[in-house]
Image (spheres, rainbow, N blue to C red):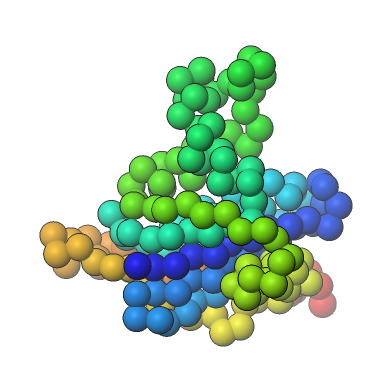
Length: 191
């Protein structure tokens, strides 16, 4: 089973934020991802980390995602179904915060086979600590090292056909190119 670890954070809330992801594939290979937003919230970064991680997987993939965010864990495993029934309103009839990200995460969750786990943050859990470090590196303008841009993270089902896999690879490559452009633009802004 694929293991995924995610974390997100902010310097100020709202403020500049970053997210980090560690993915350990079924063969033990590790991929690290991170990203930055200039003005965001801690919860948006936690959600973004989970979304970015799940976007690397192919349809139907089985994985375990571990987060230190109760907001993400409770939201995806308990609250989101009721929010959908209520037209994306809370029990207090208020609009659900971060609805755009919750909708993305829910769609990904529905297309995959994800087991959701929670771990206490800053408690010495090695992969969670690394995700925190990656999020902070992103806030400092640094890309995750090593970045395996063309590494495919997936357990392919036997009924996945060649064209589906090829299409997924093309989509991933386009996302990597977009991320690289954003990184280069950010570096240019910092110089």
